Length: 365
Image 1 (cartoon, rainbow, N blue to C red):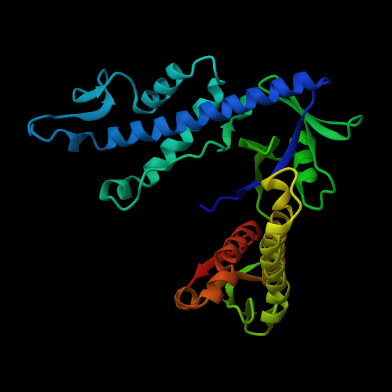
Image 2: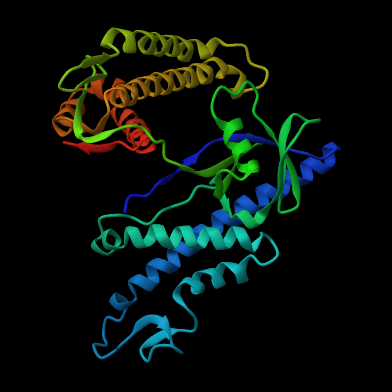
């Protein structure tokens, strides 16, 4: 049976809602401590999971050993003192007890076990290496960690407590649906799922996951829209009675290439930039232009994918087929210019997400 809901992730900046600078710094230091313990715990978990999975290969000399990764109390061949999911949790819980909320460790353990099981066969064949986590990784937490989420009229922000640390959201000039989604959560219309906290450059970002119902449109599954992605025309889509060309090569590349040229000039000129605060000041223009290109491309691809899905909805096409994509990927890999500027996979992911949200079946040919 087809799922009637999907999950959306948004990025929202948070501010510690405490009166003094010292209290805010103490709260931020605590978050950085949790991040560090989470990073160390994640590497421990995947290491133990790998050893458990490959333990049979470690018995090189004994052929008669019988074993099973199960609780010895429940299975005669079990070699574990507890359930398998509890083994890794107990390792990190004993190691970091009192240094990080157990809710974070529990959600981290559950997500890594799910991810490991998904890639288990590739680990066994040697086709994939174990995950290696960064020190600045985002750490997860469940709904039990959040309390008192509501909109504060006086502060003009959504406020809540995360493990007793008070926060308020900073949405700025929000032109997306973040404010609407948070309001729907407080009203009880949609559900908030396991989310993450990301720390970057002294700023706190909340990555909430919302479970929403799919949009309902009058679509006909037997009606098919065929789309083609390329650099000449980012998207060309047609049905039996209509055709639409979305974007052009010149329109997409003009601004992107101009940003790249400006970035190259900034990189050359950085040598002669005024110093005073070291590397950060010298590379200020370079960093700004790098973000400008990324933001421009992301916005254009959002516009293109939105127009594609709107076209399908308008013509009641319940099935969307992307044609000849493997051949075009091969061509792109052979031409450096196309590979650098096409942004094919990003466009594909945006189309996939919007199609799922609208209830349109996506087929990649």
